Image (cartoon, rainbow, N blue to C red; front, top):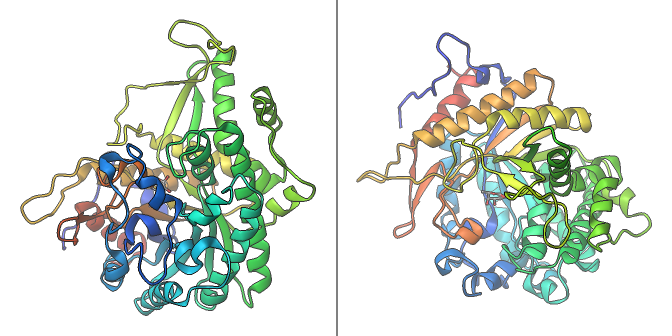
Length: 470
Ligand code: FCB
């Protein structure tokens, strides 16, 4: 554990990472369903992911989160890993069906007790807990009642948020309402790739609106319930969408992709309005956002920190391979153009310079909102040695380049205050199952043995260096 790894920069130049301030926040992130296992213990009821994993063909290899990293039973050991890496913050999520089985009614003390112990364990090791209230594990009963496309789910979420806050708010000072509402809404309800696996654009858009409404309601409830200062926020996944050329068709394809992926969330959250161009795009598809009076005021309730998750960027063309700008149904073409760039095991393009551009743009288009990178990281085809150690130089390079991108964005004026690597552990990567490994710590799923990878040691040493600890 004593290697001193410094990822290479251009010879002779100072590493931009060293311009990050000593006060910068450093962490790792995980989520409940991806690591906990123990899906039927202490009163937990099924979530949409438990159900989805049982749909033949939905998840690679028929994988599921029944055991995952067995974190539910190994929590103190995992907290020790975080502390030993010298990180100051741990971002984890609370499983709704654990603390409020079925998604309504009273709290389940046995389920809540797990998070109580986790928070105490973290604080005892000098690590700040950062709670995400919803990282995709909707109680199945709420899905049976209509799920996120139904307005009532937003109110159920606000009730649940308040229950968790009542229990942990005395010790947890940073709260994220939702993780990546685009994924919940679009992957879950419009594209069918994630739980609950529906494929209907109208459902996806209704889900997006009700997720945002749930966020706003929860921020209001938590703010009212707080007796002292708390930082409240939301985490969005943002991918850059650049036009392949300057042609009007390409520019429009990129505009539409940026609109549906990024601005549909950021604009209502921060400016209190849905972007007109996206509303028009949706209207052409016969889809209307189910906004009711007062919703946008709720959604744009001021919050304290915008969590940004960044993994990749894309380039779009408005012309298909046959040169047409309309598809067979007369819709404008929106084609992702593959660039000749290095990629991760997810087939995601590695574009750290887009990360800098994105953060600078956010600081200009949505000024005054402090940002924290709540997820960034990469899956690669790790090859452990006989001791289970992974010399993941590709992941070290990815993390280093993206941290440099953050540092450059800060130098250009973006107010980014922290960075959390995704993820502490290899874990259940949703529809990809256990095939894709994002951890900086390897998990041997046969033995549940944890082995820090070279990237974990590099991260530890980088954090020390930036904090001027040696
Ligand atoms: C994000 C999710 C996270 C993980 C990473 C790779 O979209 O928030 O749970 O799956 O991608």
